[in-house]
Image 1 (cartoon, rainbow, N blue to C red):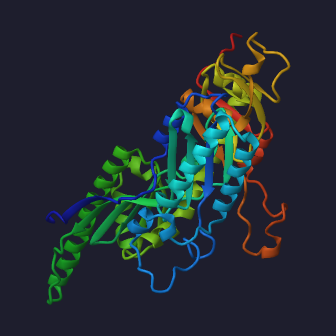
Image 2: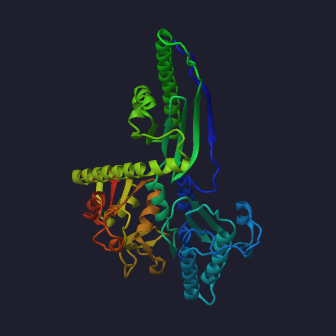
Length: 452
């Protein structure tokens, strides 16, 4: 009988200035009451640098080398000039909005103050490791929420009656947390990855029992038998710790990495509930760096997410086909959202449309605002809204799950660089094409109001 093979179990978390838990941020922003008289500014930025110089031009020769924390807190004059493409777009769009609502008035004053606050955040507070950032601001209502991300988001500037949360919701939906178990016969690390950021881990280290003996014959066979028992016992400890962690954190995807000496005993030791969550088994060296681990596992997790999206669309098609617990088209989805029926809102990532809303009633509709208030209210209270943002906002406020379906298939490697911009190259994924048949949006319902 082998002794306890596990020498030490260490739990650790990685401090990061980036937001890895977006769900509570979305829920908090969804509680912001829409206001047609005090519009909300939403800024999403692809904050990746232009080239290889994140801050811009090289610092002056002989200038002191600042630590990252010093660079982040130093005034802009002490840092390199900003050379990020998104910043140029942002400055231009904010100035356009200010000019459009100027030269005076409440909206003009609010936009001017928002612009100053956003600039101060980008210049002195946003960590240099961020690849994307979402900012929701309205100085008049004391609203300023900045969400730095490890992933880029499209660069957009929107001013409207409600916060534009679709890009943030898509990051949350497209990059769910997954776990990576990297192991060999002596060590194992279970890492958690959210939005392309590793933010926590559990490390297990085994004992060196049994020690190798110099004698051959029976001693060597006994050593091999005991070494095999120790690996099996270590695998059982790893499996138990993995199951406990996955259950506690609610993680549904696990990638197992290592050599066959440990992955085979692990597969035999995993509880069925863990086996059901394994999306891939990879051959990786235990010395693989965090960056190497992300490079190897992110494409696997992304493909698993595409497969999950296809399954969601198939469920939606079945629900619509049954004629009771599924609806397609924006008008039917909007009606179901208002009634609180929607369990899962499903829309393609390039869905667009216009809608209207009277948030005071509330009343909502598709297309341009009607010539008369449909409920007898004041027509002046009806505002035009982005339909995508309205659907996601209503989904969040009514507790619906939101699935945003990826549309673009990867461009084949053999396609010439000069051809990559051709629309014909980027074919649509089957799940997105299926949604196109119902105009890009549908919903799986919690309950039906059909009395027939």
